[in-house]
Length: 170
Image (cartoon, rainbow, N blue to C red):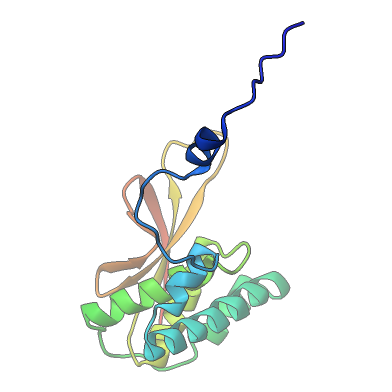
């Protein structure tokens, strides 16, 4: 058998060990991508995200331990009369959706109830719309949206779903 690994001359071994000529970047500590995003937020955004995380966690726990009607009655007990601005709706949608990524099994219903509570705390009216997917055959697929002043805040598009019921703020 022939030995294919020949001795490399000394001058070539240093050339072979050199890395390609690229710009050297300072080494960064490895952080999860989500954590980098959180740390890049401003102080007020971080506080709002923490509040959203607390609400989403509480609603998720409530839906696990209590009935939907009981959780809904706790969420909608606040007086909410005014319509929210688009900026407030976007902020709530961002905060709840971002917080839901950290809460296991935070479904569309969990997010909609959480968003409704946060909007009601600000005095803004909203309603939860529940529907089922059209033409699903044997399997029933339900979905929940948070709607404020005919704007879908959370839950995505309503197309392809049949409207069942709306649960509004007080």
